[in-house]
Length: 365
Image 1 (spheres, helix red, strand yellow):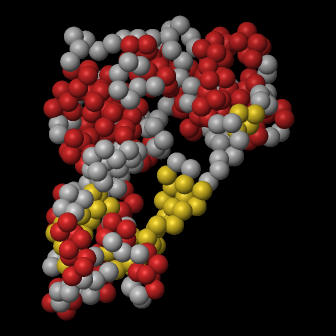
Image 2 (cartoon, helix red, strand yellow; image 1 turned 45 degrees about the vertical axis):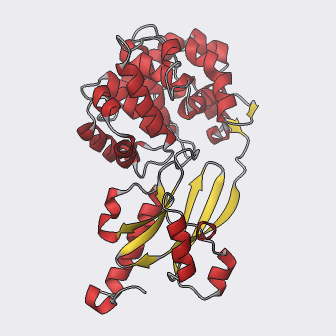
Image 3 (cartoon, one colour; image 1 turned 120 degrees about the vertical axis):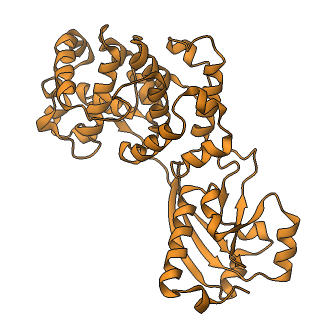
């Protein structure tokens, strides 16, 4: 229905949504015995990450760092280790900085505007935290909410991306926000998008607000919102597996690196003074091929085994800060990027199956 009509019927809409949420809300750890800290941690973890992925990380995090003070006092290496595998590590660093900022204040701020002054807090996160924890009248507008509002109004506007769509629907989201329990309303909207109003194959027959939805009348709710397709760029990366004396060679990103600061990955040939094409041409063993997506990139990584030559030894010795030998039995003590942790584990497991004992393997050259 038109946005104006939807706003005119907002009381009915709010009641229908709230009744559904009370009955169908998922039992999630940050909703049980809720606290400001739980809300903040969950909101950071849920950025660009699905609930089922976050659940074990959230439990482990709360066990290790149960409050802002514990997080603020923790060394960054421990914070990153607890985050290992969730990706987008700037979130972990921002959450760490945020905790230090919060404990330095006389009391946590209670308004979205004040929260936006803190590290890692944008409009959505500020609205979510303050509406849920303090009842602030701030509407959350994420991808789920955009999808719901676009379908409710059958808005045919074309948007270049999710961010521009969020701005366009912010006023409507605010107009639908009830003065009482705005946090529950925000969570109900996000819950509806996550569990009913799917991007593909929405479960319209069980939607609690179907009577308000204009997109159902078009017969094609999946056509809304109209977002420009993402341009995915394909990239190919070669990685080097170099093992010697029960140790694996890893590359640690510089502390000032934008994306993977201080994290470990298998090195690229260039870091070792090698040519990727020459590595493959020399007949080095291809141990694994992995794929991962980062923002707009789809990356294929091929992991080749390489022998430890005198030239390579000299190169490693010259780069002690970035090239590190890690004993195989101590790999769990360093923080690897999620995909590389998985690939390293898979390669070692595969080798263990094919070469069952250390005695039968012998030592690497």
